[in-house]
Length: 409
Image 1 (cartoon, rainbow, N blue to C red):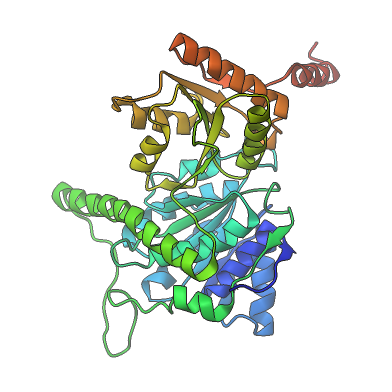
Image 2: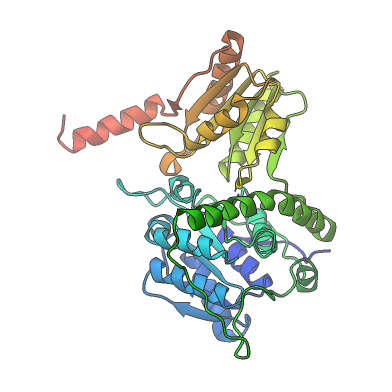
């Protein structure tokens, strides 16, 4: 049962996720396009709508340090950042993950400098993919709110006990209003009880020291591998949480999200908000007779190898459309999907790599149709292509004009 839906931006949906999770502590530092989240939470805390302590810190580095320390002391902690802010906190991401504290961080993706743009791509959040944080990538504003609740449930499970990032695209979700159903607080409490850690937490009658010791390689290897095993546990815990969430709220979230896969011979792999564009393109291509489908990667850490393999094995062609670029390599997620399928006996005949949407650049329906055509050709040849950057003739003309204006031609 839910309250009636209302139009919320992705940022407001994130703030409501934290409020419904009844967080205790919100250390914050503003950065575009995340600021609306922390402004909203600050207002709620000031008016008493949210019984949490809100503190504006002097940087993302201190913000994340405070978040980790409070979580280690037993508080349910929420914070948010974006882009350069995530990089400024980067050192502490690894530290906090090593502390095994289950806080939730929302990252509002924005392309990294330089050059500078304020719009979205995923190089920021994927830079943190090996930090030990779990990563859930949302497609819609509703999914942002719901994923925050699910992230707390997974992160606080004693089989996992790791921090989590919920990622959404800057501007395309952060400032876009979509219908969002806010779950009733009592139902949320049934899904996500108050945080009462048995192994963490500060009590005056039971003093304890929490810190990081300098270990030799034997101890270091042990604890790093324990983090890996805990992250892998999150795959099963996610499914348990997804089952309970669907039962209580009627919305189902799996590790991956398949669209029109039932008889698809060619499958496009995407993540985040642009997957909505991809699904529309798949529907249009289907109407023209192409047997195509889309697989959206929702959970990226831990990497859901079995779910990806199950969805993609036996296809003619699989193409990954990365909204990121690793200079000197290509698309990051293409490499991970290719590694997952490489040892599969029934792997696709061709694997293709496309890079698009960098800096929030739009991907037009015609470009999707060109991708589907290249996938069909690759499947018939049995040889993949890429990485191919999506960049139109109009893009080239615009760039040429800027170069001329700059006096370099």
